[in-house]
Image 1 (cartoon, rainbow, N blue to C red):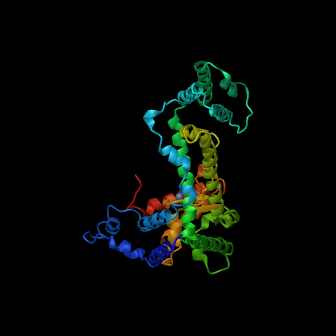
Image 2: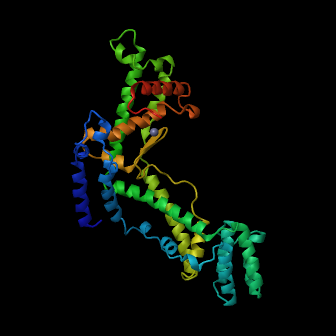
Image 3: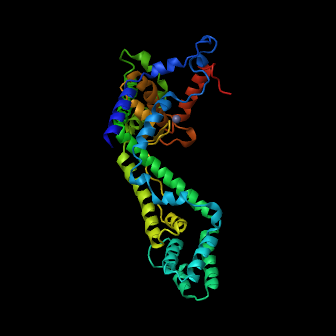
Amino acid sequence: MVLKSVLFFYLIINSTCAYDFFRDAINLIDQSSDPCDDFYRHACPVGDYDFLVLMKYAPIFKELETSQEESAWENLKIEEALNNIKPGEIENEISAYFERVFLDMCQNNDPAMTTFLLRTQQMLSHEMSTKCRAENCLLRLGGDSNCTRAANDFKSRVAKKTDSSHYQEYVLKLRENIAGWKNKTRAVNILLDGNFKVGVDNINSFLMNMVDVLLQWIQVYKYIAKNPFELILQETPWVNDQKINRALEAVARDLFVIDEYGIQLRENIDALMKTEQDFLKCSADFSGKHDLFCSIYSYHFMFNGRTTTVLHFGYDATNRHPYIYFGMPFIARAANSEMAANLGLAGYVVGHELSHSLIENPSKSYLLPYSSAEAINCIQTQYNNTCAEFKEV
Ligand SMILES: [Zn+2]
């Protein structure tokens, strides 16, 4: 990062630390309406604005992203090739496109024809070697002096293996995967460049504090007969009724905020660079003349499992018990020193995610199967009794 960028981030991140979210929210209040008529609309009027935190951090994330523009994974040749495809100039059906390339090479005695056949053979057999079986062995087609006959045979074998797919399907899938891997790579780099890691630690501390409070409630209940906390205890009698004190404690103690960002970075960069390398090797074989073919080639060898996601840009959080993870807006916000807004936003969401482990969907209940239905019922009854303003329809 050049000095100018370092200074920019220092200033912008520091100004966000001092930024007062409450003032921002207060500025939105609709002073012309009476809070007694509709307090909600008075405080949060309908308007053309997004979540305040998103609006505040989006330009900062954008700037951090721009500072990474020079990175190798932001400048992939395969992406350039995909962007250069001119739809009208290529046959839709992949076998027809391959046939044309083959016929052209055959008729012009192109020395690259053997490599083209080998690459196609590897693609059809998902095998990066010269090994092949029966109909996938294409090299011998190169020895046929009748190019039209060989091209026909070649086409039908490709069609059989590719289910007559259209090339756009491959292009779309490649674009989608590349965009996903890049996004996850960017997220980790923005976390590092923006010094937001402390936000993750703060969120984890919120969680640990909440779990401590929760455990106190449960423990105190055990001594209900002889201590002075009876009033507090009576707020959670269902825990005892269901005899889930121990189970609940174990589930709550399990939880943590995951921070395996190094793994996310490595896996996503690996996936990106593997696809790029396969493409580059293939492209070099044909001096860049058949880059669509090479994109489809690398598609056949790309990583098609799920790469790690513990960090993303969404305005949400996810519970994958025993761990939970948060979108960048919450993490960036929690890296901020303003504690009241931290608790009101990131802290509130931590509580929500913790509750997902304690109260599950009764039809998919794995952690506390005996109490979730009862708990949900209790919450719903409470909601129905108290939330007249926002009654569900
Ligand atoms: Zn939720």
